Every structure is written in C-alpha cells, then in structure tokens.
Length: 141
Ligand code: AMP
Image (cartoon, rainbow, N blue to C red; front, side, top):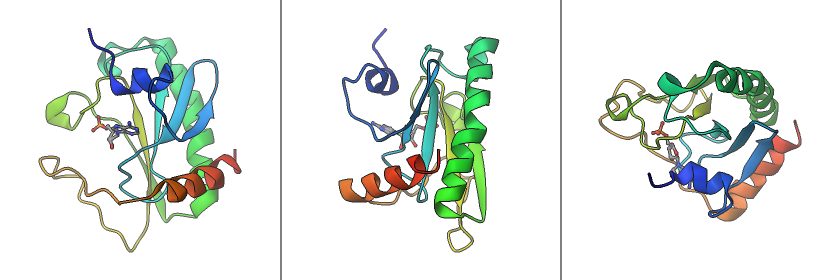
C-alpha cells in the first residue's frame, strides 16, 4: 500500500507546520485551514481511521487533544472549537491515516458542516501566515 500524505509528513518526506509532538502523537497545521488555527492531530502508528485503530492509539490521541485544543484556544480566543474526525469517503475522509481536526470557531465565520459534498471553503494563507499561527499556538503549549 502507498503511504498516505500524513505518513509522509511523519517520515519527513514532505514538510509540515509542526504544532506538537510526543512519542505517539504528531500535530500540525492543516494546509487548507477552514479557520485560523485549524490543526490536525494524528497518531504515529498507522490506522486508516477510528474504525480500525487500537484502543491504545485512541488513548494517546485522547490525551493529547485537550492540550493542543487549549493551546489553540489560548492563542486565538475563538468563540468555540469543534473537534471533528471523518471516517470513510462518504463521511468526508480524504486522507486515510487517522486524524482529528481541531477547528476554532469564530462568530463572524459560519461553517456549514452538514454539506460534505461541497468541501469546506479553505482560507488562502502564505508561508509567513502559517509560521505566525504556528508560533502563536506553540507558545501556548
Ligand atoms: P479529511 O477530509 O478529514 O480526510 O481531512 C484531511 C485534511 O488534510 C484536509 O482538511 C486537508 O486540508 C488536509 N491536508 C491535506 N494535505 C495536507 C498537507 N500536506 N498538510 C496539512 N494538511 C493537509
């Protein structure tokens, strides 16, 4: 099986804006962010999605999520945060390595999560914008 793009990120074959790393978990900025601070959290051990992951993998991710979500909150003071995880194509999964989206929500930016046929409209950001966002979040960890 070909590696997914997230396994290539873990193997440093392609770059990412790293937010957090421990023995089991890696987090980085989504390159097509829905809102400012949109972060992805993935296990280092491969599974396709939540349906085939081991309990231990889920536990490692579960332990990391509050830390990272709170850093995103402290960095941008959003009005709320969604944590979303898609399983299989029909449910919106496009990368087949388990991942959790941390999506800060701002009152002035409505997002229609119901319509998965139309991909969420991403923000367009430059490298400097990503670096600024990365620095803001990592400074809160
Ligand atoms: P999903 O649709 O739940 O599978 O989410 C996959 C996410 O990965 C999407 O939000 C993409 O914007 C994001 N994505 C795809 N390629 C990359 C990449 N190279 N670096 C960071 N995020 C990516």
